Image (cartoon, rainbow, N blue to C red):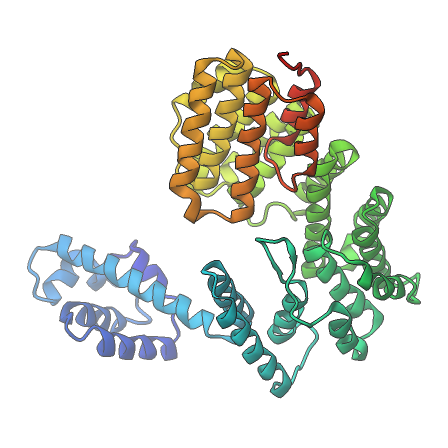
Length: 468
């Protein structure tokens, strides 16, 4: 069993952790004697993990299981899952993860529509803040308070601050120097930059006017970044990007990732509204992130980020880079997602090349596992059918099938995303019906906060003609 996942994990446990997990097993799995005995037997060889006594057949014999190594192997698998779950729960109980845990509780209550319980939880957190000493500027409790400032209801897309304002929060930061204050302000704006109200402008203007040391790179880059997030001006975005490229080594690794993430989020949000110039700006930022280890860490990249890179490269028509990226970095994807992610990425490229027939063939034979990839493939297939057959029967049939798919999965996705997909289908149906005026459909498209495939719809509307 030297190669088992269980033994690999057990080797990492300290003496104190081994003792604690043994007590956990005895208290919770007393009826499963084999599990407790198996763990005790393994632990008895601590410090001598390479011993032949830990081979499956010898462990089986020692536990009086005869030659039934399959049973021991299954127990090892069960024990591995129990141990891993135990360690994760222990980790969540530490101060480091207090912030994530509390925010998950709040998100769960909001998702179930329990606003009263959510606010009771907020009040409890605030009482904790009053009693708890804050030892550093980025403590989990400070982060909880920070998130409260930028917390908003996704249903109405409005602030849900319940009397607590960004002004009140930033006043609490007076004890920190201007650099840390700017850093907090960037975090706040990054989370809520499209929800700014006029009542906050005086506060933000005062931050912009703050006296910074022009030779202090830390203050300079966060001040420039704050200006970009506040003004939503591409020139300010470019200045921040230029500063990052010229002095990235002057920032800690954590701050490098923070500035990079803020810029990515900013450019991604803006590119959904205006592909020029933010689309190319985002792609340039991704390329820089590749060279600096900000996009891929430890030779790993998430499937979502992989798709984001391909998507923006195709939107700005840099198909060559999209294909190169797939070839060079596909092996950095998690192995369990690799096949589907690469398949969808190749389909996105085919669609961008207007090779709709090939894209349609691949989409019709694919079966994606992740829900977001299912949605993406469904929308792409609908677009391909329209490109190939116009408002034919197959396209209408796909519209109805997509709506049924939405209804079956509506409880598994956010309401805002659900609306964006339904708006996309409704606008496409209006285009196919050819009954509404071009101006009316364009107005519906432009006044909708979120619509998937927006640029493709705009392209179709450019050639739209009403039937009568």
